[in-house]
Amino acid sequence: MKVILLMAMTADGLTAKNSSEFVDWTEKEDKKIFVDVTKRSGAVIMGRNTYKTIEKPLKNRKNIVYSKSVKGEYPDQDLFYTSEKPELLLKKLETEGFKEVVLIGGSEINTLFARSNLIDELLLTLSPVFFGSGLTMFTDKIEFDLKLKEFNRIGSDSILIRYEILK
Ligand SMILES: NC(=O)c1ccc[n+]([C@@H]2O[C@H](COP(=O)([O-])OP(=O)(O)OC[C@H]3O[C@@H](n4cnc5c(N)ncnc54)[C@H](OP(=O)(O)O)[C@@H]3O)[C@@H](O)[C@H]2O)c1
Image (cartoon, rainbow, N blue to C red; front, side):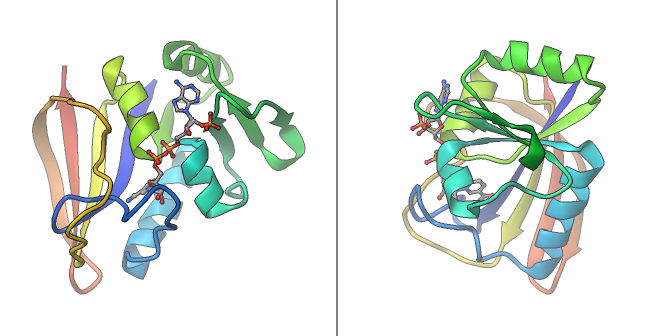
C-alpha cells in the first residue's frame, strides 16, 4: 500500500493560518491536481479538523476521518470515522482492494502517520503566499531523507514537487 501525503505549502513553509481555516489560497491548477490524485487513489484519510474545514465528504472517494470523539460509519456518503492504528487501517484498505491512499492533512494526522514511518511520497504544492505564522506540516519533530522525483511549474506562480521518502 502506497501512502501519498498531499499538501499545499506557503512560500514560508506553512500549511494553514490556524486549525479551522479552509485552504482557499492555492491556484486552480493545484485544486485540479488534488482532485486527480485523490480520485486515482479512491481513498482519502484526514483529521477531523481538516474534515470540518471541507464540511462534506469528497465525492467518489472513500473518506476516512480520524477522530477520538466522533464515531460512526456512513457508507451512503462514503464517510467513515476511525481512531484505529494507521497500520491496521492501511491493512483493511488493502484487503478492500486499494493500492494507494492519499493523506490530506492536517498536521496532527500527518504526524500520526509519519511517526509510524508509513508515508511513502510527499506531493507538495509550493504556493505564492506568505503567512508569517501558522501551522506546519507536522506537530512534532519529524525527520525524513527525501529523493526528488519531479518538479513542475503549475498555474502561474506555484511549483508542484514530488519527493520519495527514503526508508
Ligand atoms: N495546506 C494543506 O494542504 C492542508 C491540508 C489539510 C489541512 N490543512 C489545514 O490544517 C488544519 C487542520 O490541521 P490540524 O492539525 O489542526 O488537525 P487535523 O490533523 O486535521 O485533525 C486533528 C483531529 O484529528 C483527531 N485525531 C488526532 N489524533 C488522533 C488519533 N491518534 N486517533 C484518532 N483521532 C485523532 C482529533 O479529532 P477529535 O478532536 O474529533 O478527537 C483531532 O482534533 C486546517 O486549518 C486545515 O485547513 C491544510
